[in-house]
Image 1 (cartoon, rainbow, N blue to C red):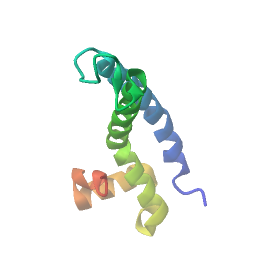
Image 2 (image 1 turned 60 degrees about the horizontal axis):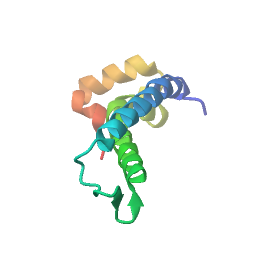
Image 3 (image 1 turned 135 degrees about the vertical axis):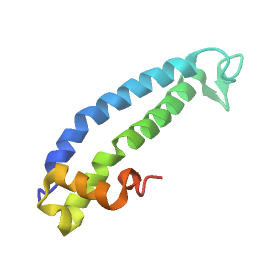
Length: 110
């Protein structure tokens, strides 16, 4: 029932910090002039701040998902694959790297 919960907790803090940092950076970049959101601050009937916030949230989600995918892969392998179950996070990580290489840590990432 609790397999993989430790790595889930380890993943939460960096994931949250990365999302908020990426969001802020993207929001500042998208709020700068020259992004084509309309001279009056309107694009498709949505105000400029809302469009910038939506796009910044999307960018932050993609960045965070890509950066934390290896931790999620290790967690899922520990939870699902019985050959990784008793190894812990470090052992599962070594086994994935040995069997699939570094790209195995992003397997299934969209």
